[in-house]
Image (cartoon, rainbow, N blue to C red):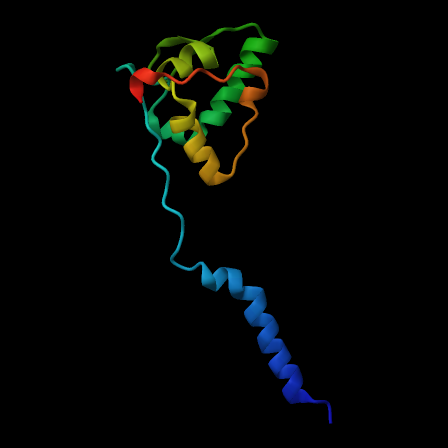
Length: 128
């Protein structure tokens, strides 16, 4: 009387189409990117784990300290003093933006706005 068979078939087709992106992609995650770190033997500003988890937080703190407070010196957790500068501190070691920054940011589909104000560094041919 209510065409329950057609309704159930319609519901099954709807659920299959609605969930298709989830079950089709199971087990096919893109491999994690491996950024190429091209340091010159110097230590990073903070530990590797801290930088992986909190580098954008640190860069935001640096931006605020440098531009709003005029403080250009950062003391890290090891007690070392570092000049607050993306281009003169960070990019000295991580000189290849494409192989270091862009790999993870592209994977995570993150569009950081660092390069809205800073110049994109020239890629170092020495490390390629």
